[in-house]
Length: 121
Image 1 (spheres, rainbow, N blue to C red):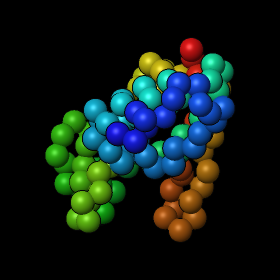
Image 2: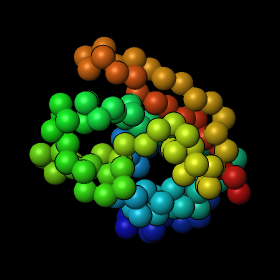
Image 3: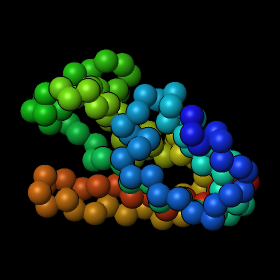
């Protein structure tokens, strides 16, 4: 809701780290729409999403399925578990994907997924 109070074309860049994959899908779309509006034309946004988890990993973490690829942790935190292709389908509605990079997260033996995006408007 706070994003809606920010004026159009107010920023040249933004970072969304574990944001769109930790909210319900409708809120992720609202966030992306607002990011597109808030960023200047050709503005950039870095999005980091969690790794895609297999069913065994989801079970091991105790995640409970509550919707289409939407899980909830015991602590009440949402996790939207999408493949790269699924995330890219969501992202491409609002931004152009400039670069993609996976960064190894040693503590959990997983790769975080990072997208550098350019505003489409």
